[in-house]
Image 1 (tube, rainbow, N blue to C red):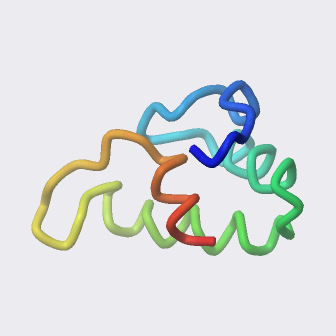
Image 2: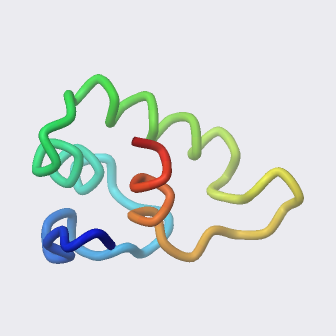
Length: 66
């Protein structure tokens, strides 16, 4: 995970709480607006890939997102 602190954002469990996403993204120095865009994008997809496979770790998704 690129050496980031895995305790920030209270783990990678899917679906995450919005506040956990916001805290993690803030820790990375990214704006809270980006946290909101990320969160609601994946929430609208029910935290699944386009082929219906559930995501297992939202922090991995976030690291790819940014």
